[in-house]
Length: 113
Length: 112
Image (cartoon, rainbow over all chains, first blue to last red; front, side, top):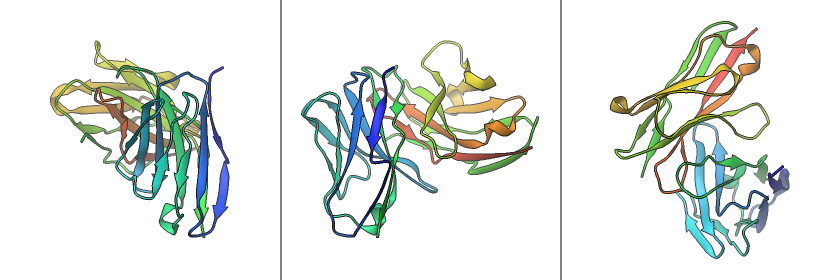
């Protein structure tokens, strides 16, 4: 079965360090998304990509970057981790067109100390 | 940008009670609407979706939702909840831009 895999599932890092969260999907979807989930805010869009070499900023993109070198992967990098980036991060993907649902990975719990 | 509002942040019900969770969105054009569920410690899973046609949509586990265009609403309902429905529920909108906007979520606690 197709799936989305995120790694690591849990990560503790120190303030100022660079951190990369991996996201790999086998749906062959063009669209991929990164969200962060925080209490009271639901899911907020960080970055998204509509295909290889395409990346776009979401509503909370400051301090994050992504790259899309192939269809399957959209790694999320925190350039210099801050305590405000402690959160649960979800990767998602969807097919072409608006009439498609998003499929989610299991999430990565990141703690910045 | 689109926005999605879920006004019930925390709902507590007893088993067999009826459930209705509100969802309102702000977008005047054609929208595609979703309800997702997140069980404790798990990822989001699709409960149901609306693209067009019959505004009453049935999903998994006995859930249904009604799209009322005039009210910009897509409320989730279940006639009789079970303890296993304890979870967080998210409403989402995709307004044709291939981006999904989520509400802030509603935590449902069902007492056995």
